[in-house]
Image 1 (cartoon, rainbow, N blue to C red):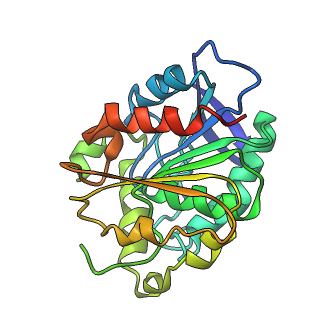
Image 2: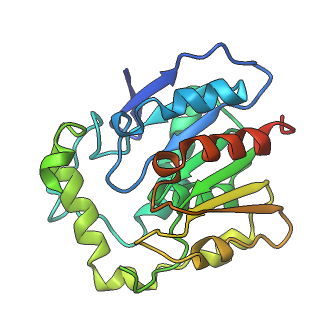
Image 3: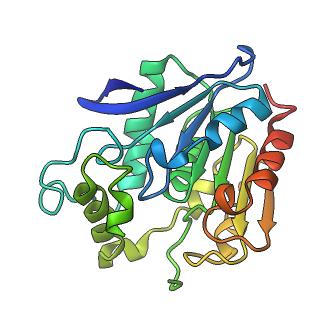
Length: 242
């Protein structure tokens, strides 16, 4: 594990130890709303092995071993555009620090939304999203999180407060999704308690190509509930891409 300075914040970064083909774009893994580097466990390594690509896993500010957010329930509280800011300000700075120009983005939940938003405005090789949030729907832990976050209160409250904020009800990134030109693979479980299949149906680029995969007996985390099938679809999807 290493720490990178990104826009004045120390960000936890893990490079996947994989004998990768340097000609292939690396995969950037973007975690869920209460995720971190550690919570991916060994899944990024297995995806990199299946695809022959290098991988970068990082924790957003306030999660994992990255710097905490000062005054997380006050001035540091997340704003309704926090995923837009991560996609347009933090992720470009991180990629620049890593010397990566056209990555494959692989995001889960909030990370999937951030991946879509970034792909709408920046060049990427491909975008793989699992259970992304595209619109807000009316569908719809602390001790268990302590092992994964240096500051568990910071991680929990910034996520909890923004999702209960009435201003967040207007979250809608369908227009941004229509601008994506890179190939998109969107995956979701039929038993996802946080969103219906409308979430991936609404990922509809005007000019780009999108593939959708729906998993039975699967909740909000295809990579945990259906790891082999998820990995197989990702490897197939990325195989012809540079």
